[in-house]
Each structure stands twice: as C-alpha cells, then as structure tokens.
Image (cartoon, rainbow, N blue to C red; front, side):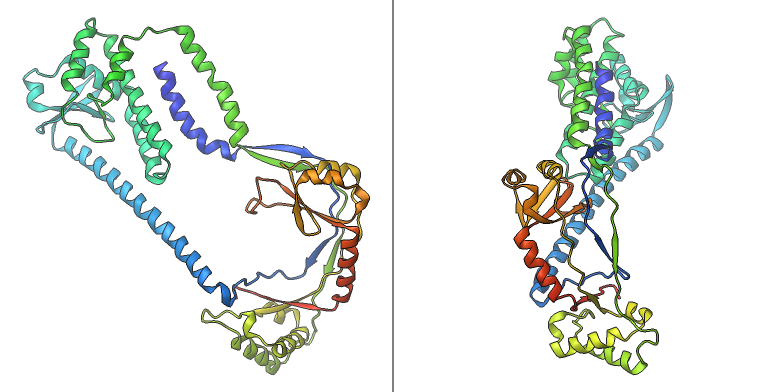
Length: 438
C-alpha cells in the first residue's frame, strides 16, 4: 500500500498538469451562420482615450508589479534550492567516503543526524568509527537510497520553485516525505525481530538536529504516525479497495477539469461578401501624402500614437478624402485608416429546432436586441418572432469562454426593421480606425 501511495502521489501531480489539456468533443445541433463580412485589410484598433490614461497606467503597473513579485520570489526559492544542493555535494566531496551495498557512506566531521541524498548516506564520522551508529539506522537510510526517494523530493521541490503560490504542493510534499518514512520503516521491520527496540530508537533520535529540507532524514517529525503504522494490522482487502477507488476518482477529475470542445455538426454554406475600401491606381501625390502625415502627427499623443479626441471634424473629413485617393499600398502604410460601413444583414428567421438547441446555457449565450437574456426566456418566443440571427463561436481567450462556447445574437422583427433602416441610411459612411503597431 505504501508503494502504491508513492506512485499515486507522484502521478497525481503529473496528471494535474496533463488533465486540463485533455479535450472531449461534444456534438451540437447544426446552426445556420449568417453572411460574414470580410475586409481586404485587417487593422488593430487603438482603444486609448484621454479619459483612460490613468487606468491604462495603473493596469500596466499592476501587470509589471505582479511579474516582478513572481520572479523575485521564484528566484529566492531557486537560490535556496541550489544552495542546499551545493552544500550537500560539497560536504560529500570534503568528507571520507566508503562504499556500502551499492551506495556511498559519507563520514562527516560535523555533528549531524543520519540522512540520505541520492546515492549518499551521511553519518557522523566519530559515531560511525566508534560503533555508535545502529544497524537499523543504516538499513533505514539505505532504503531511502535504494528506492530513490530523493528523486521524488527533487521533483516536488522543482515544482515548488515555480508554483510556490499553490498551497497544495506543500501538502503533497509533506505526504510524499511521510510515505517515504513508512517505506523505510517497513524495510527495517522486515529485517529485524525487535520492533520495540526500533520504536525506542525513534524516540531517542526525534529531538536531534535536523538536516536539509531536500534530504531524507532518520528523525522525520511526524513520529507518532510512524509508530502507529508499525503496529497497524494490514488488510489486503482494504488496501485493494482503496487502490481500486482511484479509478472513479480519476474519472471525476477528467470530467471536471478537462476541456470540452464543442463540435458543430454540418452547417449551411457561408456566403461571404467582401467590402472593398476604395482606392486609386495612381495613388496620392507626395504633397498629398505629406499633408496626410501632417494631420496625423498633430493628433499624436506623447507615445507617438494618434488619438481621436485630437482630430477635428474638418481634419477627419480631409483625412478621408486623402485616404480614398491613395493606392492600396499607400493605404496599408497609414496609421489612420477608414472602413466603409458594412451592408445590413439579411433577414433570417431561425428554425424551431435552433431555438430549442439555444436553450442549453452550457453551450450557448443568448442576446436579444443587444441584451443578454436567460436561455430559458426563449420559451416566451417562437421562431417567427425574430427577423435576424447571428451565431459566432467564442475563441479560448474570450471573456465568457467556458461559461458557454457559442454566442447567439437575435433581433426581434421590430428591432431588425429599425436596424435595417439605419444601416441603409449609413451605407455611405466611413469609420475611422487606428493602426497601433505602425
């Protein structure tokens, strides 16, 4: 059972990193996607405004402050870890070493409690040469070496260096170390007949000086649990039941912590419309390009980026006029760009089957006339109440990803009529946008 617990603890740590990357596909009902609108050029939008300056700065300070704190603490843990490794290996190099059953006994001049690390068993030289090191201690420490317990501890310590903020790692570290002691005690008990003497030996050593945190030491602090384990009646049936119970636990972990991938069944073909930004073959003259740059430069902030509040309506109109006479190559090099207003979406009435499928809140988030609704509110509508629909799949970095995986935007008939009328009126308008990384 102790051997099983050792591997259970280690594999649990590994699975905690693996399970979140396991994904399961879930099929959903087919959904008709409305016409998509594509632009010939894609631009990133500059969201900075005068009212958001202090907020953006505070967010930046918080971001860098978080990473500085994280790396500082991580560096401290890493330094502590490396210093301990160096101290132990240096102690081994500076001491006498004798072979012992495939391991190495390090005879140190320091007053220390027997402990082991990798293939080394560290003992006080005077105590060893005078015969004051009990055989049970050597068997105990050799069990740590032969069963390679140090690698378990090193694995957890490396995890703690980078994930020091996770309190469960400290609990795993404690459980793994205690189980190592159970395994070493078991090795001793299997070779001696006087268990009572060994228990007294534990009492005698418990208050002696401790060794490094990355070593396996004879006087592990939780002695009471070890003493109880020595006299505990072992039941094969109980041990087997506890081991088998891991299977449903693993199933629950996969269910709750894995990633669900929503797979859409066959959808109707999506017809795309391209909205082309007008341009000319000849392009703007050097003088016109210089005028455009001059207006843009006037609108720049202290970071060298143009902001909307510095552009007057007259300058905006002039920029649009100059932008439309540029060639495509000239347009692609500008920091301020213009997009034509997209055409109105076509009238589309959802099917009753689609309405029924959208009631599942774990897959769909539903908006009606621009407002988020409870999915159950769809019971109050029939499919003919809607004049337009738009279904989009959320990316993994989306705000609501995980709460649902598709966003459904619906317009009632009256709302769609008002939207369509406004879109027709605005069809000749152009929208100004900003390229940040220029």
